[in-house]
Image (cartoon, rainbow, N blue to C red):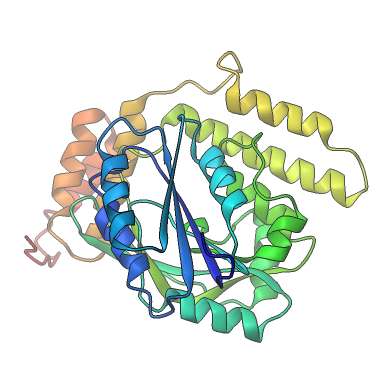
Length: 321
């Protein structure tokens, strides 16, 4: 690897063969090109590793590491240990970064020395490439940080750029947080500076109906609570060992209590969300997702109501294909 690069980009991959090219191309196509791209194959069982090796042969900035499956946090720990850059940039498989993302973030960090991590807005993209709207926050770094500390609304992890000295100072990612690793990291970074979001869409966020499972969603929510407890303990000068032990149990103990789960409910909720976004944009394809949600939960009144509303004669829809 290069000994002197400005940015180290770290990405974990597990069975992402279908999405690899679009994501990798968005990084290799950045207008700022002084970076290394560390991709950790987290024990994929599809052809992801072969494709990654091929891509690494094509561009010397790509460095592929393969490990046994351990989850995203494990992959990020592995990748970040190899990082040599002044800044650490995150990228998630399936998301696509805007070509000027790195340059915009570097310029922002150089102009805001009190900011330790910056992300940005995003466009939501559906499973079939549907445009689902845009999310940008018009807030100062202080407002972004205060929002996170008060209500837990963090900055998008997939497009974050972090000062490496701050990243190392707080100890990087922690294995106890199998999920909500970003939340835990933001809390620890907040003790050394501000979080920020650039008021511009820096990436396309691909929404996957089969994303995080219901049981893991519960774990993620519980781990976010424990991350806050760890932050509060450290702020008071108390030891957070017991909190980390709880986090480790929630993350890895299959016997740890979790909320009752139903995969069909989680998928139905995702499909209702996608349908609702399309409905708000006047896109006729919303009906497809409402019907799919109903097929999973036949007696879900909310999904039925949305579907019926989409047939009202005064509603204008675009016939997108």
